[in-house]
Length: 396
Length: 201
Image (cartoon, rainbow over all chains, first blue to last red; front, side, top):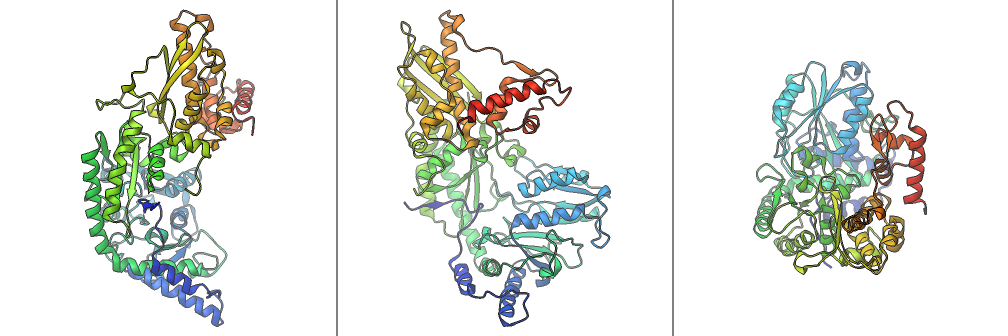
């Protein structure tokens, strides 16, 4: 069966040219820290990749450090706040306050909870019904002891694009450093760190057709820094551990390709997104869109179906070769549906039946049409067996 | 498909669930029972046709707002109970269903309980409607922790949700976190429900 992959926000397939780059580097085994020729060859690959990643966001190469994943990048930045070392210049933990949004990725939310247990004060800023950060709440939460504000650039579940320039202005106005988890943004939207004055920014390779296990953290020159992984001089002493040369090569090539392909692709995806959205709207009743055009990534459409449980919907689609994800409780193994949708005040009868479809560079119009052909029948099938749906369109 | 999340039997029942209640079929039933609620993300209703002479289930239907595991396990259950005496059907546990299904991932076990709970409610409702109150099994769930009003049912639920030790149980239910007098009884119930639902592991 031809599979239709509509889950690009979860991960992406390798770009064929990224694959070529990685394959080409397969025999470069040297330790980039070694001084001999094998080492220098590997070092050259790593530094070349650093330049490419830097170029994608208009950073200086020395402002890019490689990490093992987006989650590691995010953990690195947040964990700095509990360091009281004079060298890194952050406030002492007793007075430190961290501000995050309520719709951050779990790697930010759980790390915040852990920091809270260690005595850091954490403020969580909510979002409105469209999933956009409440700027008035952010403003209120800031004070002179705020040392770090971390707001994601694009939400992974709904694709909502946050007003980072405004959040940044408020954070800097209060004297706090600003971090943005941009793993869903960089390579999909133009990001220029010369214009956008962020202090830290997280990038992930596998969201942009690169390999898993590689990411990058932008750390603006002169910004205080404290390593998460200690014990080595690698990455300017900021992250111990021998560099993952192959992953880094893949990330570098992926970044380079994104710069070339991104603009045209996003235009094409916006058209497909509209086709998908309007197609669902005209074919299926009692739905609620959780992604809003103009405010969200063109690749992402999150929609809820009244009276339908998301995991069952996902698995019936999977049997038709259509791969999506859901914010349903059952899919997460807990009793709570997606925290992002709950924060957007989506009624519970909708929140268990959400579907996230995220398209990418290989997505075609034919694929969108196939989804539109299959989806209504599956929704109807589940609604007919549902205790929570009556065919006059009401929720029991 | 190369591999699936669940066993082949779960998959088969999920793809082609048996005895679903479709409104247009006009299935006539003698009793129904509902459990769960939409807020928690799953709900189940069982409909039974019962021979009043022999107190035997002659036919059944069900409906659910539930995930793949709930659909598959209830489909299996609905096949198991046809021709069964009410009291025997009442005693089917989720361990029996699990055996029939060839297992479920542990975090999905709670979904499978939905079907047998709804069935038990339907059976009790049948007895009530026929004035056979002495046969009704259902009793108010006993309160174990008086301070924080934690019932037996909540402890069972926590076990199904993954509580395996007293600390986890306390995290999930707050049982015994005030005066602590109920600890012994709560520990006993915890062990009982772990054995009941996961004892065959």
